[in-house]
Length: 114
Image 1: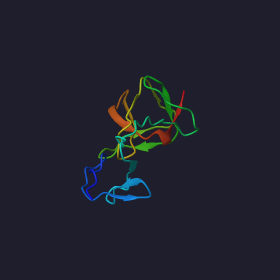
Image 2: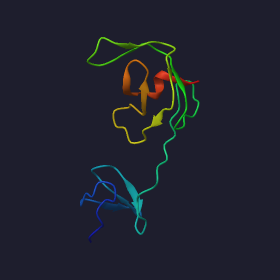
Image 3: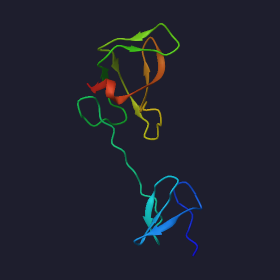
Image 4: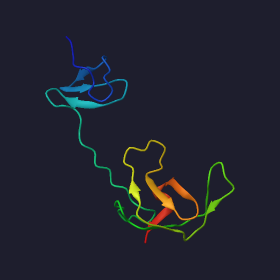
């Protein structure tokens, strides 16, 4: 019997188990007849659990060394008008511009909503 390719990674090695189609390569599971892709709206929270939104102002809670530079983003630095990145694979889920330093990406675990 032939099963459809995985909707997530396009693997051709899908198999059925108790009425559920499974992809052995990415471990994605879906039922036949469904598209298999679910809209994922990831909620990004700051270090204390507040939900962050595009355009928010945040404060840095820890000195952050800037890779490839001798500069440091100091504790208490306010960052205005942030943009959230929902598809970041490296954990840097905030895109912003810091005065005196320039554009950079931050991890939400090192900021709190101002």
